[in-house]
Length: 243
Image (cartoon, rainbow, N blue to C red; front, side, top):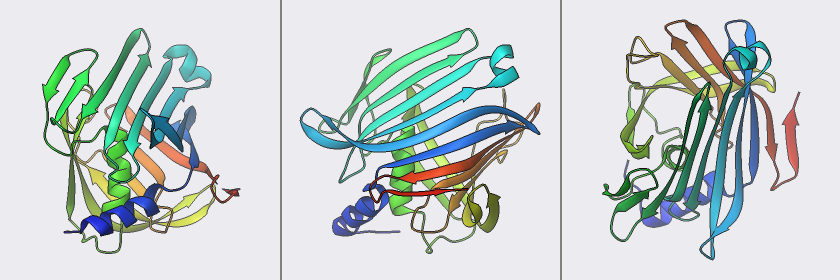
């Protein structure tokens, strides 16, 4: 798909002009095991208006007692280009902890990682969160063809990672906020420690103007984990959709 710069700017505005708060519940099989949240708001960095996205996930109940998880990802990205300025990864899983900040130098096509220093990277590289909003602006639309693979180069977990997801067609998801028509994607994941097959992760994105993740499902070695949307707040219009 080829878009002009003006089309990109308009698409980016439509994709990310609103302040949003999405809430999710995480189930492992039939057991409720966690909560997740995805927030988007306006912020300032180096005197410039940017968007600030925050994704958090944590265990609750028995899962929190057995194996506590609290993960946070943050991205500060340009309002016009949707390219990230800074990304934060703060991971706490059991006894494992990892914190890192990455800043992006667009003039020199470099990143500066607190953990590994300065590296050359491809032009237009994203972090994992800004990549979602970029895809939301560019790729989640009626022009998608079944089988089409969307590819976005990202910097994730302190290394370059090619994010790829295949469009599988349309599906309807029964959610807490009603029955929603969705785009269905299968990201290409790395097999090994958690995944047995490359298509063991599925994502459903609402096929409407909101284009929000409605459901994410992971088929793991030890069972299925599902993350479902329970609440969608749009603060720019003071609207609240919930049930």
